[in-house]
Each structure stands twice: as C-alpha cells, then as structure tokens.
Image (cartoon, rainbow, N blue to C red; front, top):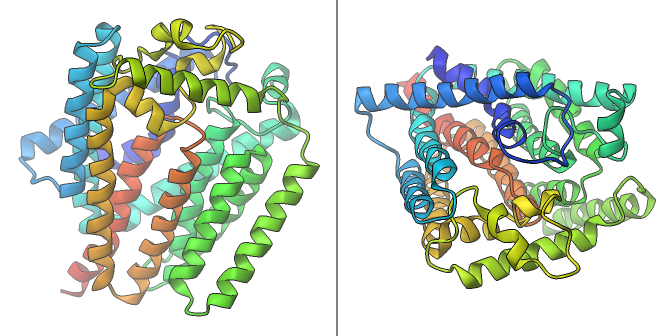
Length: 397
C-alpha cells in the first residue's frame, strides 16, 4: 500500500507535467525547473508503478474507473491521429494509467487503508497551502509575486490551479469533520487542513475558485438540511460575499477577462475544425496560431496551450469521441456514488456528501480553467468517496 499512499501525496506534482515538461515560456515557478522536472518524473513513475501493480494483481476495475480507462484509450487514438503524437501518446498512456492506479487506491481504501489515504491527502494539502501562503506573505520570489499580481500561487501553474487544489483539500477535510470521530479520528488535522485551505482559496483571489466554493457549500447545505429557507440564506450570504470580494479585489490582471473569452473562441473553433478525434493530447498549442482571432493574444501567451475550459480542452484535443467517454466517466461515477449513499451509515454518508459537493465545485471551476491536475484529483477523491462506506461496512463485519 505504500506506493499508493506515496502517489496520493505526490498528486500535486501533476502540475509539473505542464510547467516543467511543456513549452510554456510565460509561466514563472516557485520551484526551480530542474526540481520540477524531477517531481514530474517521480509522479509518472509512481502512477505507472501503482498501475502496473494493479495489472499484475489482475484486480477487477470499478465501473467508474473502467470508464476513465476508456477515455484514456480515446486519448491515445486521438494522439496517434493528431499533430504531436510523440508527446501526445505518452501523455495519453498516463491518462490510461491514472484510472488503473485510482482503482487500486479504491481497493485499498475499501479495506483498512481509507484513513491512511485521508491523512496523506490532508497532510500534503496542508503543507502545500501553507507554502503558498508563506511565499505570498514574504513576496518571494519577487518575480513570481509579480506574475501572480500578489495572489497566492505556490508550486502550481497559476493561482486558479492552487484554488482548485485547495477546493479538494476543503472537501476531504470538511467531510472528515462532518463524519465525526467514528469514521476519522484525526479531527485536529482535519480542522487545520480545512481552515488553511479556505484561507488559501481567499488568498488566490480566484473568482472561479470562490464562486465554485459557494456552489459546493450551497449544494452540501441542500443535501444535509431539510430546511429550504436555511439553504436560501446560505446561498444569499455566499453570493453577497463573493460580489463584495469581486468589487474590492484589484489583484487581477485587467486583461484576463478578454483573454479568457479569446481562449474559449479559439477552443470552439478548434472543435469545429476537428470534431471527431480532435488535434491530439498536448497538440492544441500547435493549431492555436491558426484558430485564434486576429486580436487574440499570440502563441507565446499561456492561453495558447489550452482553451481555459476543461470540457472544451477535452473536446479540442480528443474530439467528441473523447468528450463522450469523459462524460460517461462522470455519469458512471455519479450513479455509483449515489448508489453507495442510498444505503450508507450516517458518518460515511456525511463524508461522501461533502466530497461530492467538493467534486461539484471543482466541476464548476473547470468551466473556467483546464488543469490536468483535476483528473488525478478526481481519481483520489472518487476512491475516498466510494471507500468510505465500504471500509466502514467491512470493519463492522
């Protein structure tokens, strides 16, 4: 189980597959490039190691992870037919390895490993959030502080990616707190992780992150409360707070709104030109100069590397075939998770509801961002969600 736990700890290293291994000249990193490359390699090795262990054990695959594997196969086919197969095919193979590795994490989580995985996630999440906050307060390195317009960014690609990761930490920490000691005993760790993650989301000034957090909070309140008025009150307070933060916050690049619209237009144009199999994983930047509007940012801008919407990015790089497989993964997991909730005990049910609300928030956030990190985050959070009730049931038996 140790390699699987190490993989959970190293999930944030997914970000370095982009910042260290891709041509991304406009990005600035907290970690030196050589260290980021080492971390990216370590992440890939762990994914392949855990996936290979699962294949050797001939473990049956959970329906949700099987659907994710189908998406990986679609990504391989799109990359073979795409514009950068030498880079795209290895990346797509990693997409295949992630659900296989995630399925192994789920199997361990169903047994006696669930608490260990939760602890690993909360510890690594707390450490990275604290590092990001410390760097922002210290304004070090200065170039990164300027690049982020004074917002927290940490080891990630940009503040929005940090906000997405912090959302996942909030989801697991909040679930552990709601579940109570009967399910998870390290309540001090969960409380600390939740607080530091919420502070981190605020420190990123990520408008999509803050709005997504509000959506998740309202969804969780609706699931836990039978009082519709209380849910409406929570929603009103959150929306008011977000509106006030938008009005008071001046730490965003003024060009971001227009550049995101330009990215969406370029993504839609790419899908229209390559509807069936897309341009291949990682090859979007090759066609961007030809699909961008005349007044859109040039090919050296970060928006040239993805359409800033995960669903557009999936369709642009793997086509409508890949998008259908991606959507089927979401549908299959949702159906399975709801089935688990139907017969779950109170403690694991509260935990799972909180994590599902967090996944909903992340799904909303990905309407405005496209991060490979989100696929790995889903693999782990899905394992924890499905494993909560099953591990409790096994312990009782």
